[in-house]
Image (tube, rainbow, N blue to C red; front, side, top):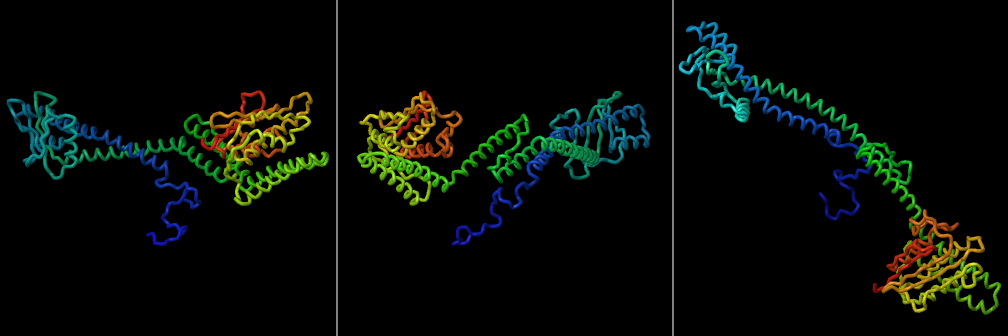
Length: 490
């Protein structure tokens, strides 16, 4: 009984359900021996049912044969004895003992003769005319005799087989036929049990070898794999069976392999590790940009210093803001976008200034975003997204050693209804095909050497927070990332 005020997390009752995964020793122990025991039991039951269907006509046929044997014996003897007017008592007694009858009479049409009689029969309980027997009546009569209680007699009438005898009338004790029918039923039952046990054993051994043992192997493999799903060596070994269980092994092996890979990857994506990696990634880039400005300050006159100083301060402010945001929330989620209406062309110019693309020696930056294109987005987050994409393009172009190659980064944008579509192109070496499927997943860096694989993952997360999408346009000859950011009203 559950008591009022029972605290949450109190002791679970002893008879409560226990998860199969709990090490309580009950896993693998089944009632009635599991599938094997149930299969054996059901096989015996089904064979016995089949034997019952065979037994019903068999017992009816036994009854008819038993009665016809008595009528034939009585008819043959009676046809011989009827040739004389007198029958010796010894012959009468022998005939009655042979047939088990109480009285035997012959009906020759015009004449009816009493051949033999031991005692005067009492009241007749059953009258059976073999000329009127049908399969259904024979079955009903058989069960009537099997369930008969008492010491009564029955009268059996049938046609004789020899001589001029037309009909034989025999009075027999019901118990005599009942005794033989019960003995026959016992033999049928014993034979049925033997057949059932042999059949069930053969079926049990066969199905256990074909199904139960492979199923247990699958279960043991799943249990072994569940102990350490990150360990690829625990993946089930495919046996090569060409049946449904073989298909199950293949599907299970594929599932375990995919799960092992996913868990192995997810271990690297713990919240704290991902948060620290994000902070480190963005701060490293922002501080690198600040360092770039400081290096340039050493070689430029004062007008340039006055132009670059505010940008250095803005970059450092962004770094402080990222750190404070993570410390406040204590998790790896980005804050919700604080959307404003922005001039996208100016955002692109800011990205170029931070990366030093305005007067880069080898890379040309082409901002083709129309000045009238406005985007409804968070200023800092859309800046970070474009900064990561343009920086990746710049790093890919800087790895090229051939001076004859064109190194160009292009920004394009267009409005399509309530969405703004942004394209970032570069003439770099492109992205290898084996990395494109996991391009926007964390820790899946592309061809960039030394990267941790977070830049594109951060871009995808920021764009998704705006309700937009990002993809690699593989129809273009150069590398082209496409961003689509809808307005708030969309």
